[in-house]
Image (cartoon, rainbow, N blue to C red):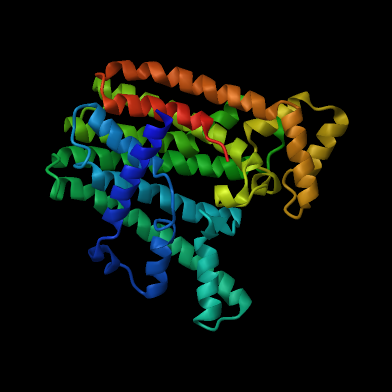
Amino acid sequence: MAFDLMKALHARESKVSEYFQQPRFREWFKPKDLEEAVFAYIERSGKRLRPAVLMWACGAVGGDENVALPAACAVELFHTWTLVHDDVIDNDDLRRGGPTVHKLGEMFALNKLGYGEEKAREYGRDLAILTGDIQHGWNVSLLCECARDGGVDARVVLEILYYLESHVVNTLIEGETLDVQYSHTPIEQLTRNDIVFMLWMKTGVLYEFAAKAGAMIGLNTTDMNHPMVAGISRFASSCGTAFQLQDDILGLLGKEEKLGKPVGSDVREGKKTTVVFFALKEATIEQRKFLLSVLGKSDASQDDVQKATDLMVELGGVEKTKELALEHVNKALPELSALPDSEYKELLESWAHYMINRSF
């Protein structure tokens, strides 16, 4: 099934990429710097997990997943604009194996516009903010295409849009805000549940939305409490949290060329992950002192980052986080009982296991 899952993911990724590459979209964005920035992350390779979940949720309730394709592209764009802004906040230089949008903007300014270094950095930041803004608008228009061109009841699309812009965006940004705050908060002031809830807000809520929107489109219903809509939403919500827990492990142990983003950046930024939380609970006074001296130190040496990483593994932080991710997946799977048996249901089950078995 793992091979089938990868094949199925690739098929949906291809559909999403083809939709984005329609010439009409290229004409929307000017000047050229903005166009290149808008498409930068979209054109880089990725598994498109959120669009796939949306399309499979649509198919799992008996709908035509192709009707949900614009919505699948919309959820990918929503995710993308949050990444563009998040990269500015985190001062990251890499995303999906290439420069982040603010670094691209900086290079545009230096090489094409002839700006000095300080002005180039400002331009890169500004371009990234504007890129995220315009991608957010684009994702709304794509959702509208489900009703305008795809035959979905306009009232269904309106409910989905209202939920996205009144609940999902606020929840996700609250989670991002807490993530920033927690990086400057002593770990003693946080509980495991504080951290896990923050992770759900950052990641789980968008997976929940993808499944909810796909099921609503598939059933052509405005009823978010429909048993199949509610069940598949809870399933994706819990799997989304498991995804982020596993992502925190990969951010610590993965290889940069595979991850497409800097390894060790979470350590230098002082991110409060469950890996850190569990490790510090088991640390001796000396181990704790060392970990806290490295965590949040932006200029920490690669050697110290590696030592801190090895220590967190040794103290059980990674293993306990893996166990926690598995708990979320095991909690999620029974929610699929509301769905009829189908290939789509099997794909969703396989995706749930993939959430915690990814490795780089």
